Length: 248
Image (tube, rainbow, N blue to C red):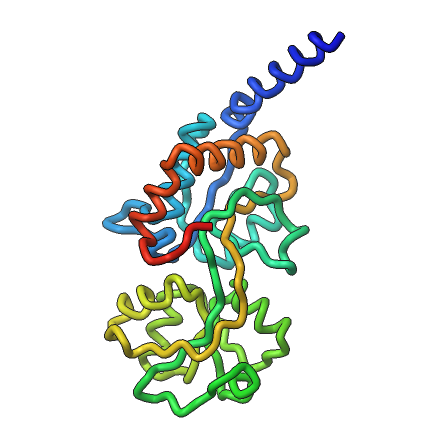
């Protein structure tokens, strides 16, 4: 009997990648350089490279679709077999989705423009600011609301937020500390113009699955990512895109 049970376990594990490959998924991401973004009509970025390698290992060939964050996040919440990356894994979201990761560190910070900055110097003062730009539906908005902020100014995506900040539409913006400098440069800002006022959260980003996705699919993706971290392929991708950040 023990031999029979061992055989069954081996058979089930062998079937995991096949079941994951045969399951059609809607795979979504957003414009979020350098994590995921379009360049010359092609998707690229750190997380895009990671997800494509996971797909190769599990045998999944579904296309990755670039969508505005709010639309993609709504699909993740409502549609079975929907995948969205990357998503900050926070206490507020923990039970809403199934998770594969971690993919990268993602910390929330409040920023000001150096030439216009006369304060705030902490979160209490930031609550009194005229407005704080945030990406609608991002973890930054959710966590600042949890912290009691009522002066948030939601916009559609990080590029729009950075452009509005540069044009003086708001005194502050809240975004991911790992990508803030790149967002600023792509909006035409100069290096050193952006001041980090306060870090308000420390999280990791993950690949999130709608809870209607079968566990066997999520397990296969996690196993593929774990294998990438063991064989060094994940580290190679991470260093290429985020050389200054610690790996999760």
